Image (cartoon, helix red, strand yellow):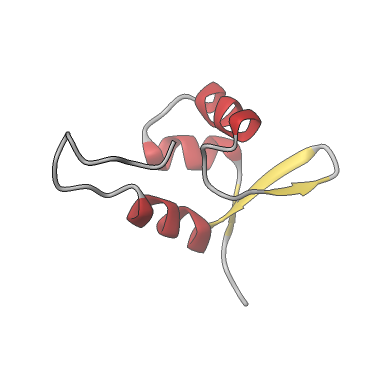
Length: 66
């Protein structure tokens, strides 16, 4: 499987959220899958795309993943 690895800053820019938001999501398990490489965290682009698709809704009353 070949997928581009992204840093926390790159994913934060892509999702238009603060890097601290991604850190909080990692702690709670609410964010996209990530890879721990020693002290570094990386995200596969495929996992980000899947996470976005899984959180796409058609109504504000629709239940989303937490």
